[in-house]
Length: 200
Image (cartoon, rainbow, N blue to C red; front, side, top):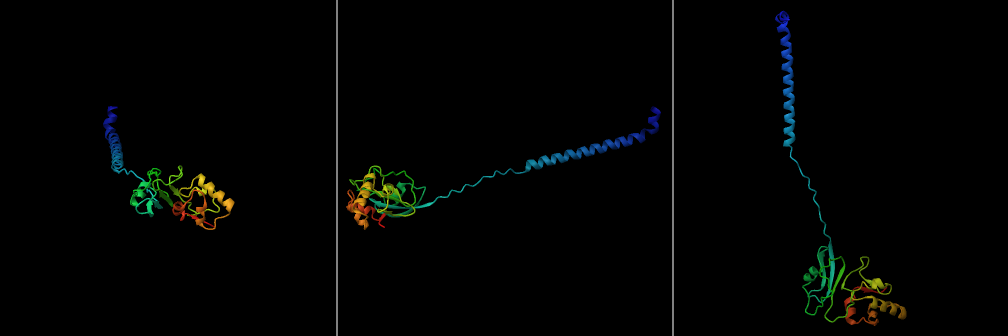
């Protein structure tokens, strides 16, 4: 064995040493590549995608009538409340009766806000805030049923039935002024609703 190593030792050891050296070199290269990959992953910025939520606020047109300082038609948004519309109209007059006004109610397009004067008779269930039918801003008092008539500010079940009864007994209204012939609807009530009714 010793003679074999002395005779062939250099020839055998050199290839073995070469193979070990090459293996070591390749292992070092692989380790370096893995370290570079880890560093590259660590250095990549993390982006948190935040979706932007766009809130669309629709405009509304409201008609403010009665005991406010500046009655008229105003443009606000559906996020506004009744109190905002009242303030835009200059606030209440000294004669205003505000106990039936829901100041916290959100506005609706084509809403009529009617503020009665103190002592004015208004149906208890009617809070004087009535959104109009979007298909037509006026109620045809010759064809409207009870529910449609009750969309008129100040007209509750009793007055709606009185209008229907008068219509059945006397025939169709010839003019909007004829509604004053109905019991419970006087000149002041007519002035309040004349722009909201029609006859056809």
